[in-house]
Length: 180
Image (cartoon, rainbow, N blue to C red; front, top):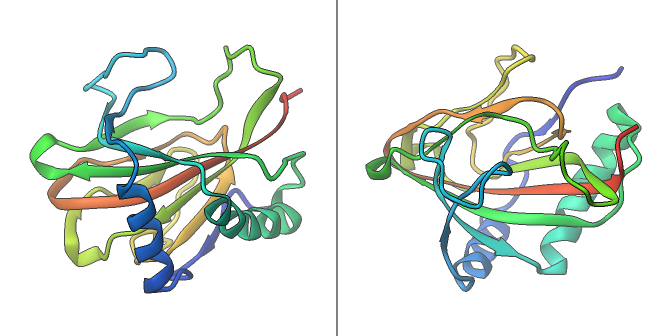
C-alpha cells in the first residue's frame, strides 16, 4: 500500500543516539536559516543547527530510506544526503513553521527527494515541539526517543514551539535527479 510517510518508533538505541549527539556537538553551532534567505527569519524558524558529514550516520539513515522507498514511495533517490542536527530551545521560542524541504527555485541538478527526521530527545526532556504534517492527519507517535520518520520532501510539515526544555533531532534530505 502506498503511504505518505513511514515510521519506525523508538528504533535507534541509546548508544546510537549518544554517538550522533557526540558527533554533532563536535561541529560548529549556527543559527538556522531557510531557503529564501541566508538571514535568520525568526517568524518562520528558530533553532540552532550543526551540519554532519559522517558517512556512518548517512549509512544508518539510508537503511531506513531504502526500506521506506521500496515499501511506499518508489522515488528515484540516491544515497547522498545533507544532514543537520537541530536543537529547539524553549527559552528562544524554538520552532519551525510550515515548510517543505524541496528547494523548488534551486538551480542544482538534484532535488531533495526523501526527508528523514530522527527524534533524539526523550519526551520528558521538553514540552511542546510536536512534529506535524499539513496534509496528513495521523495519531502516530513522533515523540518517542529514537523514532525515525521518512517522507517525501514535498510534504509540508512543521515543529510547533517548544514551551519547556530542549528538543533535539537529526534531519536529513536524500537527493535524486530533479523532480519532473
